[in-house]
Amino acid sequence: MKKIHLLNPEQQQFAEQNHQIVDRFLSRKRLDAEEFYDVVIFGYLLAVQEYLEKPRLSDYAFSTIAWRNMNDCLINEYAYWNCGKRTAVTAPLEEEYLSIDTLLPNRMQRAAETLDNQKLLVKLLAYITPKEQEVVRLKADGYTYQKIAEKCSLTVYGVESRFSRMRQRLRVLALM
Image (cartoon, rainbow, N blue to C red):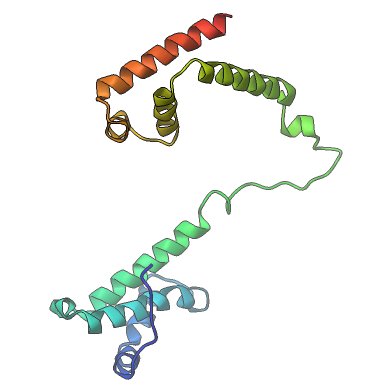
């Protein structure tokens, strides 16, 4: 969200004169004022500032600008409350029902697989050049072949061939 600063006297007066827009917004959206007033008021105050500080916005009705900003604040609030961490299912921790094996089945097998993968990775790193290591790090960071090629001063074909050679080495190491 954009930064709201302290309203000057002109902005304060304008905000007071048009405050009914906030009430109308809450009413039309069928939102409880006690719960959502604090959410949408920031969008309203930002709209007041933008409308009076940016002359190009005078082409539009203030209510349009305010409505859009209040709606954006409401959407951000819903997104915040609906993110995965806040909606995760929780269960009481009762010892008779939950154990580490219940929560993490096959944990020892997965730990062994992870350790094997790490050993294989260390072996593979010993067989690749510093340039190939850089390419692998960039790919792990989510870069596309095109971006990797630009950053490493290579062609896209050069990046692809490096990965192809590394896969071949990995297959050979896996057989050892």
